[in-house]
Image 1 (cartoon, helix red, strand yellow):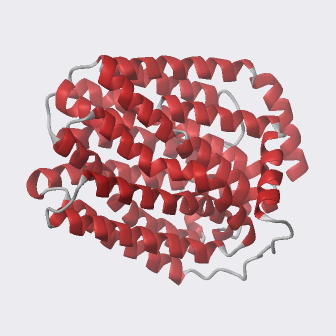
Image 2 (cartoon, helix red, strand yellow):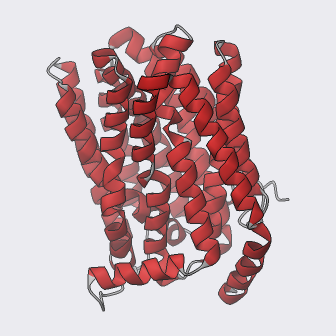
Length: 412
């Protein structure tokens, strides 16, 4: 076990990215919490909470594969600058609508779709870009884990700040701060010294390259198993986030600050999971960690759904956050270390589709089910299904380990 958790920060480009992205992600989480609370305040509808979440994530499923082909063909650094700039514009437009009191639900949905389209390209390209920021590929697994810790460190700070600001000044200021925060990551990206990128000209058309990437990913048993497991967890478990305003308001009898505390506690658990992975030099090896962390995620959701106390709910949702992050980040590590460089963008687009593309369907289903049987029962069922999925994956673990060992030998 290696405790050199921050070794990837020795790389200048990654250090710039880490700093800029860290500032920007606080704003991103502030916007996400403010968006949920705004929709809940305006409508009081679990179904509309699910619909807004669906509209923001569904573009990932539609456009993600094409982003993967672009990442394998074009300059990833330049593409990320463009996507981050467009995200900044979206935040400023949303803040203007809310601060002027002119915002409508249909405008929120439209802007969510716009941001979802941007993210459908930004996320897989950014995932594939990590390796380009490192001089030593040996630090790739650590960089991926630190990325996850960065997301969840911001997730710890952002929701708490959003809860305080919403209660004092309203949601509009959160959207404005998010727009300003994008400047940090854009400046960091422009300051990077990236060597001349290896741009692969398109030898085939988009559809052919997409088909090639699909055949490569789903022709490999370890890659296919990881993607399917991640898709299952994202569909069944990740929609817990869209139900948090209901737990904060109706179950725990709180307000926006309660929602901030819950999301912050979830982020703390996820941050602990990411740091745990970053401290292990060989955390990219597939093992019992993947199904065990999925089972922990499910157990956290089940116990949280039964709680009616904020001080009990916070550590329980933190446990769920820990399991979710370890399962997701360890899957990312394995994929990035066994994938061929020329197909990295496409495989990471499938990873993004599995992780984020299935969430909108889960969010919509969770919102609909919660409107029928209540949020606690919905989350209880989700947790049970996550544990069953973990058991199914564990049953295939011996054969997957053998196939994964062959993939590592071919890459070395």
